[in-house]
Length: 423
Image (cartoon, rainbow, N blue to C red; front, side, top):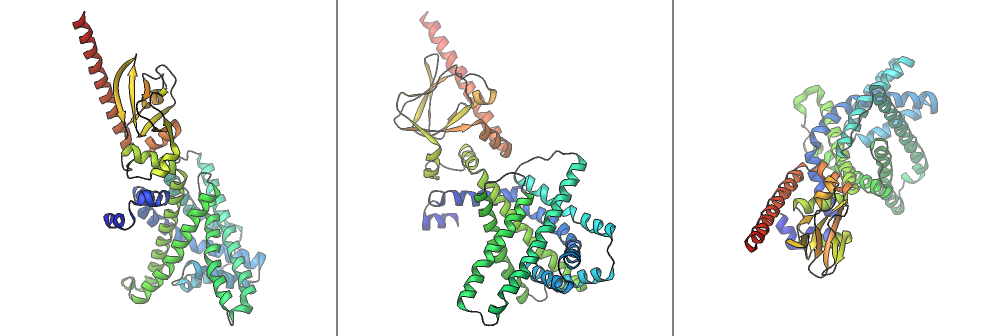
């Protein structure tokens, strides 16, 4: 398949650049982070958090903000949007519980607390995606979960109110919808969905993201969500017996499956945002692992990070402090120690990692030996991220450093023997 794509459009890394690399790495990281298994866990917590969450929404809307009938209508609209299949079964249970019980403060707290396992699972799933650690006291962890549930509740109530206002404004146009109204609906749906998903990601994202990165990830998630919805409904239409083996629990089974797919989409969208955030690191990691070729890779992107050196120009000097390492994108450099040439390094090789890792002075002088030698400077913070997220690189670099030490020692021994012979 990959070869056929290359024949049609050329090397996708070169033609598509960042979007292709980010998509490819997002698929890899989704698999590496066990996205499907995590989605299954979230589906379990999510399904059993839905009824308490919906009961809270119905209670707050009908007793605090709106009349009971209007509130029910808004919740129906929201539930139908989120759960296109068997949403009436879910609402039936919610209404049955909501009408039969007089809710006191303790009941409200119990319902509220029943949603916190979902918030906790989401937070730790996103921490894993962004490779962030959360080391906080137990009480602080529970407080953050409670705050996240509160924000989710506010978000859902806001969406319900938005559905009610939108429906009331659009009622005159729905009786005989014009072409412009249909176009407006076609555009408004993905935009509003993107807005809601953006707010959702803002609640749970463990790092600060640029707004453009957040918006791109949210839009991709919205597109995937809006795409899976009709596909899932079409699947159920042509497979009416799907889940029939569960008997009377068929509706619950299908709802859990639907929730599972939604969390797959949500986690993948977060993977995309995480990889957009560390896109520079992805390129550098790909170069060090040789999964990105300097000849066939996204050369125009790599050139943005490269500095150019002329023949004879010094890159770094022996004894200097070194806080960066260098990757040779093109050309060649010569490694010299005490004015003695040790070796020539060419494209695809790297140097300067020892001084950076050990924070010691440079052990050699490096000079460009070809015109337009292009070097990518890898900062210490980027390198630490690469090592943390790609343990295999550690082994590769240690092996490379050991081989270099061995070759250097052999060369120095040869020089000493030559001196001894001359003496």
